[in-house]
Image (cartoon, rainbow, N blue to C red):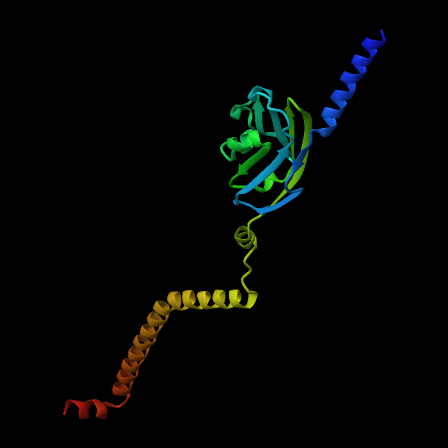
Length: 213
């Protein structure tokens, strides 16, 4: 009975020691980047024994404002790209060669502002299991901020342009009318002059006679 208890106690202590010595770390606790840039997220984990590739399980997720999204997954040493969330589809590439060295290196391209959040990787091997986390903050690109700012036209300049436009239209519309008015005035004065000449001839026959002669 004592032998059985000693064996159980040894197994418990061994499992606790294994779990305590298996560590998952991040190379950076926080990342800062701009939209449309590329970034590399990296974790390291303990590799003590020469376990088989099938003993490797990795599950990485992104806790963002849009929910918890699957970033990267390895099941029994095999990557499962179809488990990746649509938000990261085609934008996450891993370095497979460094996995056996105890390194998870994920290249995230064409960053978006909605990618901001807490990134966590759970790792399980024959040595134990643990997790590590880091934070990514993606800000809007500087050129996009410049484009989004409203361009305000100075009020005096805008009014000046409007006044000039109105004057041009007014002159364009009134020029024909002004010419017609001048023509009517000329016709009026010619007619009046002819009437005055006729009256003078009737009142002064000598003038008519003089003109005939």
